[in-house]
Length: 337
Image (cartoon, rainbow, N blue to C red; front, side, top):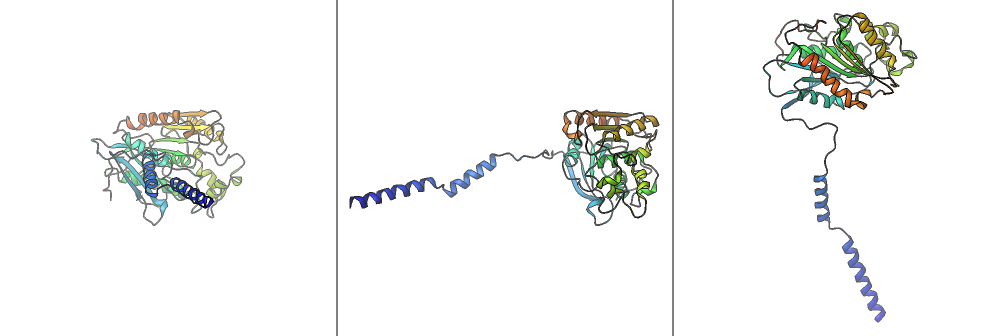
């Protein structure tokens, strides 16, 4: 009997112990909510300031394509004088990437906070159409911006651009190529100029004719330049920014790492040398020893402030009524739709 009672008491003790160890569902849920509430949301993109306005997926060319969309970020308050603008063009080897990722989402917010009107642009990738489709698209986006300059309070004589890698390639062409209808394309807003007034580029491909190892051995380049209508060799010449350098080039700021394993440093070296040899007068080259393809972000403590100072000098504080040397100006002032 005594043994039986002892077993019962031990059982009751264990049951009570287990009950104490099992958490109360309501209490546990409340504690979890408290933890979630107190845990900050981590993001590499700062919350949007209240004094900015964002418009996403604006169609800059008619057609049911994600490629023909841009995002626009601008100050809500309309300034007395039109604002300078910056065009952001994403990279990704011409075969991937998106306007809404990384710096190409956060960068327009940062610069709109400084007083710029900013657009981040998508374009046709190489698996859709080979070159010059991607360039034709970003040129159309710049023409769209000038056509709508009054609507968005943009000074059409003060438009710059930033791009990295494939985006740098396209931004450099936006600063150099003028009057070539093959590269301009047949998109709308043809009465406007697609030239930029300033260009900041990083990890830039510039010379496909002299690409180390040859373009046929670089998958992303071969896909970009593999056209049924034009030979690979002809497109390599046409698509190379170094082909189009001239004395009329706008101000350029170039960042390049000597340890870049995707775009060899010789590409930036030869491009900068060609610009200076052609007589371009405002060329700044920042060459980072051992830096890789991510030179712009890995050295952000230096590159970010330098880009800000560059655009501040050549766009924000440049005379608004001065026609730029490269002819990148609005040809007329049609009503923007």
